[in-house]
Length: 462
Ligand SMILES: *Cc1c(COP(=O)(O)O)cnc(C)c1O
Image (tube, rainbow, N blue to C red; front, side, top):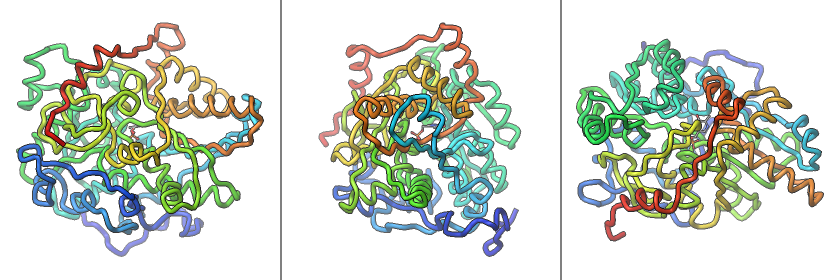
């Protein structure tokens, strides 16, 4: 398939063009202290474009290293794809406000309105586009809960690229239908750890029942990309390039709120690798860093994988096999194997370096961790009154939104709350069933358990 450079597909031509942003926002251009560079895992020196090119598409590697361009134009082919499902709705949660009896005005930005069921398609289509443009044959990736694998398979299917997805084994077992969607779009799925790579075989030799983790799946996907001509590796979160693409969420949200003459006092998002939260707060962070407004940003993570709330701000590997660059980030250690929770999308041991630095500097104001039974309680209330069955990941943001709205009820404050509804939960029904039947349990690692993970953070003297 050829990529059309000038054709504008007339989807939703009734939309005013300015409702769909034509450029992504690169928050790094405005950060007072830029996050520290990725380090080459062999030399511990800052990575260069030459280091990244064997692994990533060249244009994406350039975006990864870009600290100067505040706005980066969205290619026309990507805009055309966005027009199929964007701008995403901004919804005032009137029924939820009424159910809570809160004076707060609650808005959510809905990212579940596409077949992949999450915000991940926003970056998947950009990454597939740059791979195709470079003339590559295919890409490899990992997927935790399966949303990223689904999004990438859709994007690769659209541009005619091959796609190989390493899916964390426990998720592959929890969610067999995810695989069905991924394969429908023409991609292949391998449960990880697998015997198809050296990294996977090593993990299996140590423990044949290893439930898998994102860190291991990343090692496998990178290994295959490096060893297969015409292939590169792509990642659905954490990286700077992904934060860049996801900025479209916040740019749209700010524009839509402005139409109602609203501006959020509090912005809440769930945080796995940090991409949806980073995207949601992006346009508001631009105002905050410029000293124009001061919204309160809250990251919500699962208590079973608490990188921001209980991790360390340190250089660490992004994968268990230690073949990826090191990033300065909040981490609980690449050797930490999180419990098989039902929020597969939030099981990464680290956090986006951009968000980590913003948190460290106090611009991302707060992080909270919540338990999975609490988030399903919140999800159920939301599903009943707002009509959307949320993804368990999204329900983390809902839970803290409920807490804040209830606090407003007590104090009588009419705060404006915006949260990210990142996706739908139709592939998570076994989790809902476990919650409904009362068999779901909570897992909070003890300090000793956490220490085992923290001890795997390398001491590189930085
Ligand atoms: C992947 C995912 C997340 C978490 O990833 P981030 O990079 O932290 O945004 C949250 N919600 C949904 C629905 C997801 O698929």
